[in-house]
Length: 104
Image (cartoon, rainbow, N blue to C red):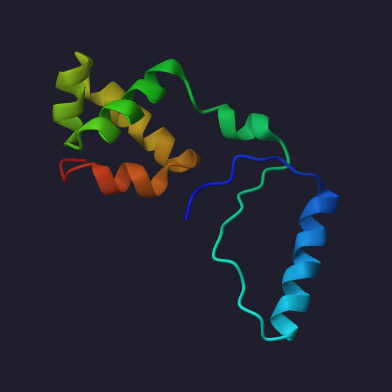
């Protein structure tokens, strides 16, 4: 299952909902996809700074503890911890928690 890379309108959202409801009533299998929608895409992007994006990339490349990640980035551990906390609060909860080791 991959993340969608399209945008849509409110009308598209409700049209899809009606189509899924009809398919469900007919007993048809429903697609196994997920759609993440935001009323304002700026809300999603607000917590993403260059430093946080760098943390995310480092963690994705090679999981490790906060200490290890801060050492690889040559940054203060508390700053990296703050960035991972903010990413987790924002929208990257599963990947960050999955990839980090236990010294959080």
